[in-house]
Image (cartoon, rainbow, N blue to C red):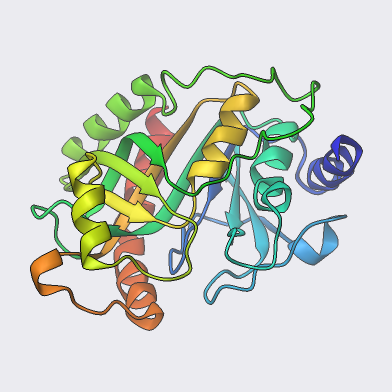
Length: 266
């Protein structure tokens, strides 16, 4: 697996050079930074292909001052046809390509009743309810130690800077705990109550395995969710994928602005 990861990361470095920062986009989310070059996932050895709607399957190379930023348009979910090793293939090759900080984005259901459709939430922590862990089995020692510390899964100093950036640009930013489930079925009213009682503010089907893999490599990261619907267990509404994508697309402009200004300040 390590040799496959190295070959894939070398393809990225050959195309873009060593990267400084990386961004992974979620369902319906389009981070539209100024693109200088594009590389299709199909051109990367051993790279899986996204099958979830709106996950486009290419990298954008975006230069900002002296920073080389790569945006990965599309990720892989455990509910697709992929193994957990394939799910975390993307963040691992971004790390091996030189990324010293990774921003993950996702479309998430709101569990906090104070949230509204279209809100942005930065994760301060997460709960892994997927039933899986990408570090299970034989450890890849060249990536990191078998039992990585998870006392700070999301970089506090970067979260602080993001909140300051949001405030100075008049962008409302919520903060909360993200709970990850395997999907693809949506949660029931009873599950919604349970997850809220556990302390979760938003729920989604990605991100958590990726964060574990990133922290295994000792790379700091941050996660920003677009709240695409708010789950109220006593009056649950349906959240079809088309609606999730539409809401995420609608919030992409302010999310792009927030990330763009954050990258200026970092």
